[in-house]
Image (cartoon, rainbow, N blue to C red; front, top):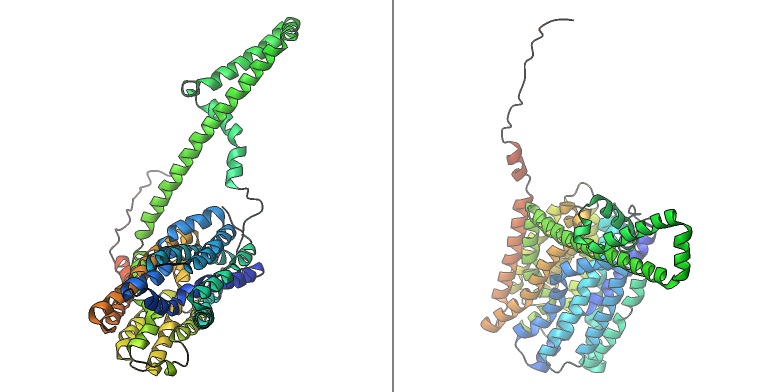
Length: 510
């Protein structure tokens, strides 16, 4: 499918606005699940590792299914996927209010809501990248702040709704708010060339022409499909008989009109059967070729060393970087921080600073003198150091400062699509981004349960956050080594073979 040139404005800013509200409405509750996490601990009485699976699944399942999400957006478009996903998110939140145990929440909140969020995220990022080129970093930064603002508002909103209506009423109201995603999705006008027909329509309309060309070029068509050859032969015989016989043939047809009608209907039916058979064969070949090309492109992506390092880095980043947004409230309670000292929820601080980080990092990514890949590496290394400092924070002030730093550095999500585009190109963005988000979802799903299990074993979060910081630092170092230009210069310094020269001697002058 060929798209028009990115307008870098116009209706693109409407896309940015509705994508912002879409991420605000769908990611507000899953990112602020730390408020619900404490309630679920008290209601169901399960371990912290098991209870953390609910929030980790909500953030990880959608990312794990990113290849499927990318395929859905490529096949159906951003608008239908957004509208369908709005029903999933709203339905999953409302269904969670009737959860009798923690296992029901694994399905309703973890899988249904998580899958809906993954579809919505892929749709908003893909359509924004299509509408913007020179201002892509700013646009991605603006839409990604929607989830951060949602985290900031929903952290306080869900706590307030729980006080007034209880946990069940809170989930019902939040699910009703998520239905506004349907209105946002209706405004996502696809950026598609008007003179480019749909593939399905083209295939159906071109079947007769393809069939006639195929019957002319392939001499053994009669061996594969005997029906078409016989039908065309009968038709030519009738034409020659009409031309030569003339009056006699006309009288015979007048005497037996039903015979001619039946013969014509049989020939038409046989011709349609042959056309449909050929169309099915060509469709199967095309589908197989598409799957073969997809596997080939996947192998080609992993031959890029920066892309391979990028998927390792995003996997380790999500193992270590996601747990603070889910468990920071419980970390404060474990550090004996009194509720009177909690001037603002720590999750809200993470949310508002994540919005600031996404916006500022997105603006920095548009400067030509800044290497976006190195900027992303710097955020990874800084975040790893901040995670290792959490065990030393024993007061609300220090936890709030670290929460703000972690939130700002988590804003590197806004430049990650930008880094992916620069690494593989805009043509392979949907494919590469789906693969990377799969590994990000795997890290999101494993990170909080691992931290919770560390606490269940040691009764402290110290070892857990040392492990988280080490994972993020390792991912940043691997990506830095792959991105260093010294690896390319080593290949360039290899001696090149001297060009072959040929000497010619002039024998005579004319």
